[in-house]
Image 1 (spheres, one colour):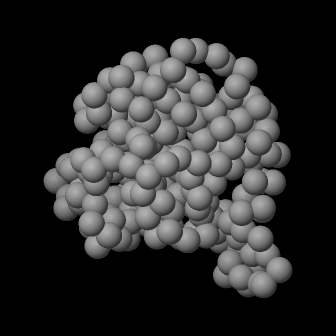
Image 2 (cartoon, helix red, strand yellow; image 1 turned 180 degrees about the horizontal axis):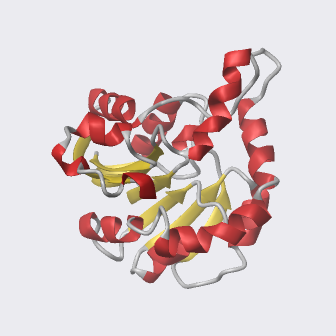
Image 3 (cartoon, rainbow, N blue to C red; image 1 turned 90 degrees about the horizontal axis):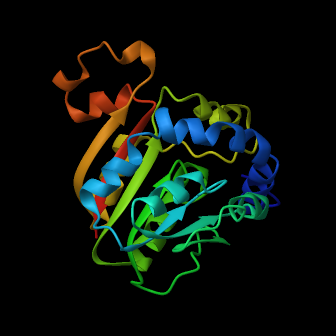
Length: 225
């Protein structure tokens, strides 16, 4: 990366420009698309009424869904325009704030859990982001993290690095994240894959986890601090 390139500013600008596009598709993703398994997965592992942060909340629809399941939710996004859109929905126990995964706006060990779906991909230093999440979660708290797999279309956002161009999507794959999280002291307690339609008839359950992850659109982790 060039010395003059500001990764965080570039990410902010990218998502500021994507508000309308994202808002048009987020509801369907959470209700019946690639994110439809997230809320039930969180409910399985995190008790309701806990305080959780939804990091990379976008227009806030996922935060709203989590709030409707009984959680006190703070949605966080690097894009001020995304947060403005998210604030159009008002519910008890639901709030939104601008924030960066590199420096989250929470006190140490103040959250029961964190949800971060397709957000760590857009960080310059994933290890630092994971350390920052660990900082704000209480001992025994959970992290539900969704990471794009190698078959996901958005992975094309890192392709131009091969031409020496600046990109804002890192190349960390699910199996790399799993190794990194274990080495940092997280316990991996559960996980599942989200697959494209073309792979749904393939007997993925017969495969070892790294091969399952290699076929995914997204792998969803549940980690315990």
